[in-house]
Image (tube, one colour):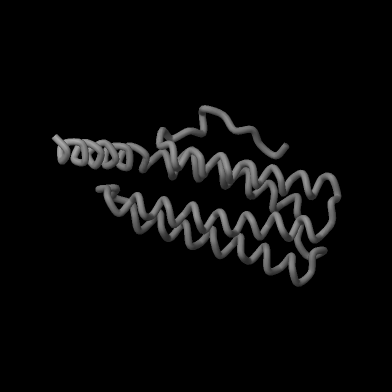
Length: 145
C-alpha cells in the first residue's frame, strides 16, 4: 500500500473527502500494479484512471470555488493545471516507452502530492466551501417556508 487514508486527510466536505479517498485508492491500486508486476497494460490503465479522476476532481473543486470568497482561486487553479499536465506527461511517457518512466519516483511523487494537496492546499479552502454550502442550504430551506 502506498498510503493509508486517515481522518487527518479529511477537509470536512463530504464530496471532496470522497474524491480524495478515491485518489488515494487509485494511487494504491497503481502502486499494487507496479509492485505485483501486473504488466505494462495494467499500469497504463491505472495511470489513465488517475488522469481521468484528477481531472474530474479538479473540475468539482473549481465548481465549488465559484460559490465562495476563497481568495486563492486562481493560484489553486494554476496548481491544478500544473498537476494535470504533469500526470498526463507521465502517462504519455509511459505509453511511449514504459522503461523510460521511473515508477518508484512517480509513486513517491503521487504520495507526496496527495499529502500536500489535501493537507495544505485543500484544507486552505475548506472553510470557504463549507461556509458557502451552509448559506446555500439555508437559502434553499428558507425558500420552502
